[in-house]
Length: 271
Length: 191
Image 1: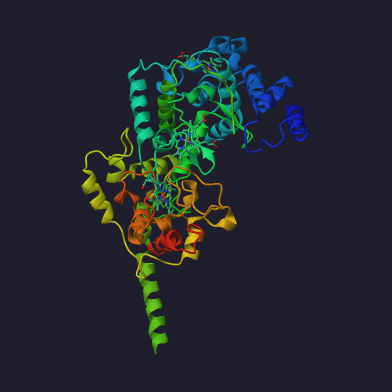
Image 2 (image 1 turned 60 degrees about the horizontal axis):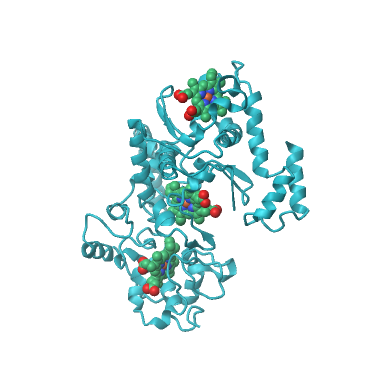
């Protein structure tokens, strides 16, 4: 793994993708990186593949013990997520679902320490890997369960909610002003343009693979939510909603439902 | 004489505080939950702080309030505006830094370049709001400019431009400086 990362560095220095620090590489550059087998997002997905088959829980089980060699039984699963799961009695996104499998079925402790390790280390590679198992399939989120319907409505409410010290909402930036620029940054239309199809996505500017939870948390930060009576960025700043909150799942469900019919193509490659 | 009195006061106060210590500790405890909120609670509390007017704008149209007439909405918003003692036109050079300091690539407390172009030398500017280049030549009343920065919703209910004065992001004096920056013939906005 390390040597691969080193190779990417070399490739970049070597000019394969010169000057893309702030931009997505051109399709040609991506093709070149792909041919060399060193697309940085692939490295992270490979790591997830490795965990899936080889990471044993305290009870000796691996993901593959239940979900099959090469994730055979999870093919197409991501295209229908988030959804309601009976065994954990909640609507879960991919991050929450995998965490639940590790604590419920593999014997990992349900404590803070493991939660942290999961969030930092296992979450993204595993989510990335599982998501690729749905590549080429059509997104098909159904709202069959009443809990899913409720979650969807909650997500819709959050999407349109003008709130915080900047009076913003997701919809102001991503619906009303979609296509416009914040400084030089173009605002996408995740709902109208079914952008969920390329999430999880690798962000060149951050050199990180992000799940949709990461993306939404990042945008909430730009809302400038605050708690005090007066603007005090240091004191009253509500930085980000923590991982695995219901609010995140609700927004994911709302946006993914809107992307129904689009073909999963992950990991996406973004600025 | 004063000093003696003061010392006596402090000692006296000290005694009172000492006597009351248990009670005030209990009080502190009762207040603590507000300060020691978890991140989840903080986030939800921030969402719950939505005011009546934000709520009226939280519909699918986003830019038209619901459940309140536009006239009433504007009237209420106009009533939130406080004015500085020195008038609504301040020092344009100070305003330039607040609007977005050219020495810092156009960043500043107001961060207006996020949505507006203005000084033509700042290229990294957004286009959510109209370009403000030449704004001072448009004949706008500085008082109205002041008002629409302090509370844009007093002119355009539910506008994407946030209520800088209402939220205390900018003080009345600072908004007056920015108003000057937009109107002064010597400001790069109008050159």
